[in-house]
Image (cartoon, rainbow, N blue to C red):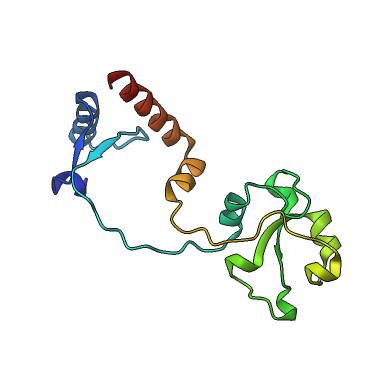
Length: 156
């Protein structure tokens, strides 16, 4: 609403405009998605995402980084590549990976070389992949975005 009043965005079509006007008129803001077009660039300061369990699961695609098995999140845990008791960083992106319980138990409190294990891919920080994260967390937004893309391809 702020961007609309500052004339930084415009509506894609009249249906979107009507949906927002109706919501404003009746003071009911539902879960409907309205896609708008940005008229001018808005600078958003970059920020690092936290290396929490949810973001690590997104980064590693819910896959054990040792054996490659894709499992439900309830069967996966966060493993420190270099154990914190051995000098590893507790909260860094580069020292945490998703592992299945079997691999995490097998590795234990050892280094990868000591356990005879290796990572499928090196851990990295998840920074500005916001579209990817937003689409994973809100599938209805991804669906609306895909609909918009398919309708613009027809018009072009």
